[in-house]
Length: 287
Image (cartoon, rainbow, N blue to C red; front, side, top):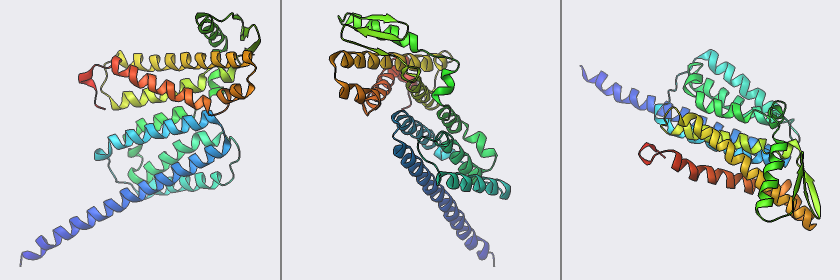
């Protein structure tokens, strides 16, 4: 007569695993749909800086989430599920009316992840997923906000002029104006590299979250990322000055607002990834 409990337990275990699998794959499906929705809206806006940032920050958040997948706790409550669902419905409703480069595109990822975390793990899950949330909070910062407090335009012009001089060009720099004998460019705030700095700062945060680091490396790695982003952008400005001097407007536009700006963002990320292997001793790496 003691056989029934022992027969029921495997069934209960199977039901628990089945429900857990439904929760995991259901949330994965929702996350994939939200990422696809966000990227489709971003690409339709044709903002190369936002496109690059979106790809980098979503990749960072997914890598961090994948890194801790074995430790995830799926236990929520009715209040958390209700609030998360309400946020999710609001995000989807707002997405239907977005046009152009709406600022909402920057906060959509953080709201989406927060909603899914509430549905999956409740308010306690916000602490469990603080790294992904922080990464996407940085993404939500528009470069224009940084420029209110820090504008590196003049510094970018000077470094670009130095690069051109080192390459043998006759160049003069006055404020934000970089002049060559046959043309000149003005380094506006939007071209000063703040967007690239934010992109690489997010990659640096991801690196710190995924790698065991010493105390000094937690400051060295983000600082080095910002320096790489600044120098790569200064090189891009120098290249654009050369194209202006040559009278090649098509090439200038490509490297200024076209896919060329994404090329330099990719170069900056690659340089940082290679350099971080030097900053972090081999025995401390986990990637």
